[in-house]
Length: 164
Picture 1 (cartoon, rainbow, N blue to C red):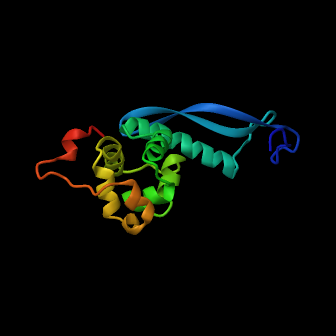
Picture 2 (cartoon, rainbow, N blue to C red):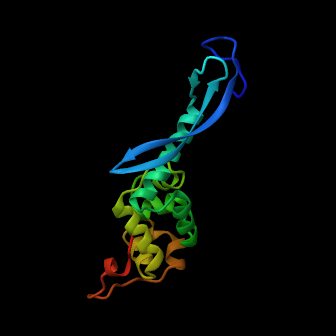
């Protein structure tokens, strides 16, 4: 779509532009990159689905930072360190069938509680086996072999162990 003729003036060329928008979010001003096509003659701005998705992801990345949540890249790293597929992580942690794909691509902002649970599972060794035992994956051989039965001591409080 780069350098195509403008549909408004039918003369100018559409050029890819990236500008930084100031977005008010919960009392903060976020600096968010905004990508679009702009006519070099009439200044008409055009957005297609690709750029809208890109801009939405950029906004979500900045919102996650402002909220103190894991970025999509960080969630992916945690999931991979836990040796889980996206589908397995969604089943274990919840959030829907394709939740982790959306979190990792910054298409959706995970809740604070989901963020805390992901962080806790990455930091507390016995938590993931316990979560697996409570999920529909507990009967699969992969999870029976990979993770020992987990137990939590009565006085154990994962919230005291995890900052996120």
